[in-house]
Length: 180
Image (cartoon, rainbow, N blue to C red; front, top):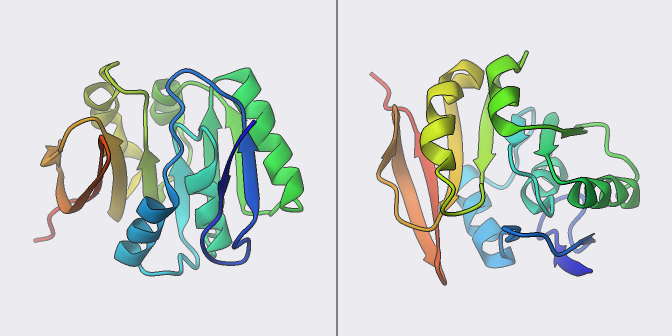
C-alpha cells in the first residue's frame, strides 16, 4: 500500500493508505500546502467535490480544514475500498460522502452546487474538455476549480487560471470565473 499524509487542519499528520492503480497520482504534500495557502487555510462552510478522488488526499484535506460537505467520487473498486477504510480511520467525519460513480454522469445529475471542485483526472485521456461543459451546472457563481494536468492551462471554458504552479511533471492551477 502507498501512503500520503494530511498536512493541515483537524486530521493533520494522519496517514491515508491507498493501493496502486493506473493513473492514480496523489497530490503531493507541498502542492496541497500551496493550494490551501491560495484558498486560505480554512474552508469553513464550503461544499467541495473531489471528482476523481483517488487517494482522497484533496477531499480529506478539505474536510480536515472545515469544509461542511465533501463529496468524493471514485470509480475503481479497490481505490474506493481504500477511501472507505480511510474514512473509518478518521472516525467517519460527517462532512465526507464517498460515492462510486462516473465523473460525467455525476456532473450531469448532481443535485447540489459546490464552492470548490477538485479535478485531477487521469492524464492523456481527454477528460478536461469533456467535463468543462458540465461544470457550470454544479458550481456556485463564485466557486473555484482546482485542476491538475500534464500541461499548463490558461482557461477551461469560462474559468481562467488565477494561480499556477508546477511540481515535477504536474501543472496545478486554481481557476475562477471573471467577475463583472
